[in-house]
Image (cartoon, rainbow, N blue to C red; front, side):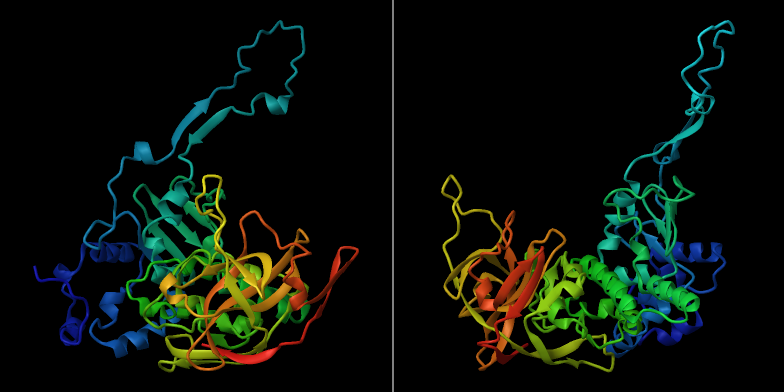
Amino acid sequence: MSQYEGLTTSNLYVWKKSLPLSLLKRKFREAMRVTRALGAKYIWIDSLCIMQDSFEDWARQSSLMNLVYQYSYCNIAAHGSESDDQDCFARRDPDMDLPVRFELPDLNQGSSSHDTEPSNTSHNDRGILEGPHDVHPSQTWIHSIGGSTLNSRAWVTQERLLAPGVLNFAHDQLYWECNEFQASESYPYGMPDESYAKVRYKSFNPFNVRRKYMDEAVSNDGYDISGIRRDAFLVWATIVQEYSSADLTMERDKLVAISALAKEMQSLMNCRYLAGHWDTHLIRQLGWPGYDIKRRSRVYRAPSWSWASVDGRNQFFFNLVINPSGVRELAEIIDAQVQLLGDDDTGQVTGGHIDVSGKLLTVEFKLPDLDEDGHPSRQLGKRITIESCDTSIRLSQDVRDEDLCGQIFCMPLSLGMDEDNDLEFHRLALQQTNESGVYVRVGSFEIGIGEILGKDDRLLPLLGMISWTNGEMSFSPNVSRTEKFRII
């Protein structure tokens, strides 16, 4: 058998006439069987529909993925096999993988007819366990779907969220998910919402936000623009949280593999898309945390201020804009631009910058804390002083140690209070480049584990005057030492 190579410029003419099924991988052939069984006429398989030796065709087709998937019948997802040459249909023992049914008799049957004492069990409660019962394995969704290797792939994120439904072939049984319903052979009438299983993950998509506000517009003769943007941002933050740690074969694809979702979000956000961020509330989005970051990509794919420039789970992105009314911004975006590789404004970028008016506070490193055995503490981040003031915040870098050189600066972004009335202070770690007035992000500053930013922290007077009245914070910013600079 010839080696499978997918669609190429050399076999395009021949394959247009007849697709050589014998050369296709087993998983693809089985997916075609499923397609026929569902009554569908067509199937999209990337390597059969995009020329594998043409960057131009790849760029053109990848920019249309939002249309390919949202207008499909459903996705077929094969979780039970690691390789495309393995079976899509897993061999299983139904007695082990599917529920076991048993029936409990009415325990009140056969009670003595001459009992003189009345029963303490009401008629409604007496047979509460009577009848058939199914015994199910627990946490099946998170083991078979949520935690599967397939769903850890970056490209699958948008394919899963954009398709109307996903038919999942797992190692134990079939699972179904769509915008409104999740089921399996064990739970044909709906999956239980198991803790941490993210059973409802697919419902966090732009279509449900759009549907919600379209219904509201019909009933209220209009809709709330700010409400749409808030809900849309929460959806985007959920997507970024999952996608940011997903696996990519090609590092350059970080923005491309999520571009279809970004296209669908644009009408909801109603603002410019900038390398994974949105123009509205951009200053707050810049504070994405760096303490779960693996490294910055050596292949340029986004400006340093974008989460797309690094690999690693961006777990708390949604916290940055979840409470916009209670946040005081400490810097101002003057201009924000990205340079695109092509015509797709959600696709690959070759550069970008933001021009900012804000503060740059000097940072110095301190020796690490030692535990009781004299070893460096496992506390999060590096201990620092800011403008020679001790503070409880620490540097969490998103670059390698060897790239952390020269003077580091703290750029305050925003200040507010969380639901526990603790201060929330978001800030960037910047490092100056060889060009005057131009900086790159090297991390963020986070509160240490188990610590809070105290109201008497010596850093706060550098930001402005803070006072509390009946638990409400008032803030008068310190505008001295404000300067204009660029972050690339």
